[in-house]
Image (cartoon, rainbow over all chains, first blue to last red):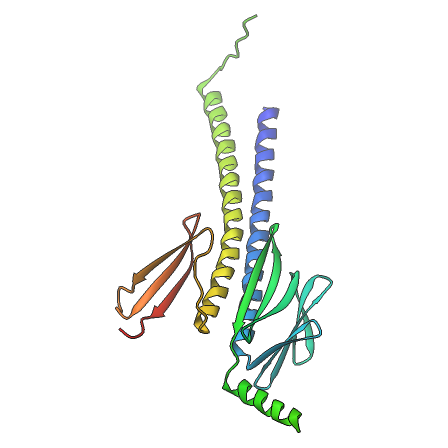
Length: 139
Length: 106
């Protein structure tokens, strides 16, 4: 009888542990979806994107969003107010090919690297700004 | 040297079988859940990769949507013939992303 009770209690304990692990994993997956949708939205809403001293800077109407890595964790600022996104990140990069920038975040993801990248095509407004900046520099 | 364990009643046998079934059931549930979890993380990584490529394609880049471990299935929308539904299916037979694309010039 003692053996039976031990087996049942061990099984129940293991089952409860598994339930806790499942809940933790769901939370982790959910947290990632929140971070990802925030990044996609920031990218999509941005009128201009560039890298500035290891920070990703996104300008949109009445809004300035920055992303940076501090202690291997991703931070986001909205109009100067920094917020810890509590998500590990390896790198924030800009790759330029044929005058088109691709901005990417690299996250460590279960012994692999998960790359979230955004192919940034500057709009007419950005082209006009560049034109005037160049004209201004030439004076 | 023969030792016999005598079951004195049917109730004991029923209890023993129930306990074995319970343990087996819990073990299989744990195994299935842990294997599903691994595939969820993998699928999410592939989903992010697919979405990144779709952004690139949306912004006019000529990119291939072939990703290792992802099957791409294109179908015409049941309700609208001018829309193509592109499904991205992982190795675990899970649809990781579906994208509707409007057919142009047809």
